[in-house]
Amino acid sequence: MSELLTAPVPVVPAPFHTPEREKLQEQARAFALERVLPVADELDKVKGEIPRSLLAEMGELGYFGITVPTEHGGLGLGAFEYCMIAEELARGWMSVGSIIARAQGAGTEVADEERRAELLRRSAAGSWIGAIALSEPDAGSDLAAVATRAVRDGDSYVVTGHKRWTGNAKAADFIQVLVRTDDPAPGEKRSAGLATLLVEKERDTFPEGVTGTPIDKIGYHGFVTWDLHFDGLRVPAANRLGAGRGTQGFTDTQQWLNIARVHTAARAVGLARAAVEDCVLYLQEREQFEHPIGDFQAVRFRLATMAARVEQARSFYQHVAHRLDAGEPCEREAAMVKLLATEMAADVTGDGIQLHGGNGYTTEHRVERYWRDARLTTIFEGTSEIQQKIIADRLLPRSPLG
Image (cartoon, rainbow, N blue to C red; front, side, top):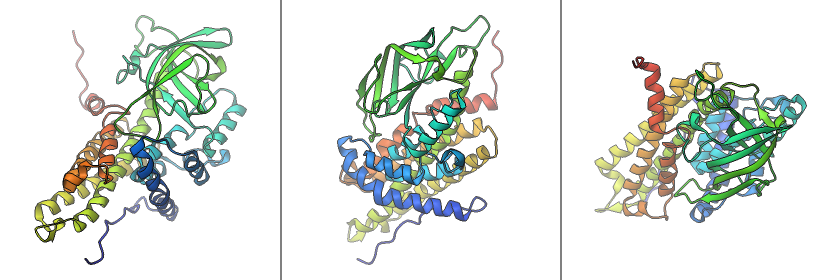
């Protein structure tokens, strides 16, 4: 057989191209293929966690501080570079493209400026990696229904409640918890009275007042996802992020989710691209009827459509990330790109399994891993249905009921 052709790798296009972005993309791509992919191949099958040594390498490359200002040790870059690097990392293992979101200055918005600066330095270095506790058994898409209670007691809050889907909780340096400190007053929004507390902890342990049970997932391995119970956990009042009554906690969470949705779109593109790249090779290697199966038009056309959809989604997330960096809120556009890119990734990775035939339904090929991880992207950071609601509400506001 002649030398196999490989799929073309993406490059940063005009008008977004700069030499610095090109160099950063090439570095992230090499790291993902040479360091991340072999680890994923070994550990995903046994539901293993990302090794600390790999996290340390990522810290040295600056991937935990892409958006942290340079004066605090970060790269001082924007959503565009953040998403671009996430795509490359997710092409190797989605959890590695995800873990960087648990730094980037998360868990640093305390009132004390000196302490905030120290936490930002730790975040950028990868020594302040957290977990985000938002969802509850009865509050997933509807975050305004959060019931975990934080009661002020002197200089502390006492937290009681139940959180679900908290990835990386035990391994983290902190847990950022959305809690209810007050009930909404008459006429206030349901989200009034929510706040975010910073729970500091030692890695690989839970603090007194917190217990956790691992959630057994079909994919998204690399870190453990936890079901958490809070029973009298004491959190210093100084660890409240943001200030004042009202909807601050809810508003901060919504702003974080806006960027997270574009980040999720980029991760989805990385997974779908991986399926395309693997299929390009497999379709040349696999022979039936005395021909490589890539010679058959039905197969070729499916691959062509897969590649086109990946390219389309990448262009869309780059466009939205660029607008975010320009200071535009892009709530509708972030929901749109999250919706389209993740649904695309679920379809394209599923097509990748189909093109691999029976071999695609084994763990002998990576494509099944891509599908398991891509399927989740349509659910977390707001389900596809929630994205549709966000988009529709901004296109066609509801008439008052009466």
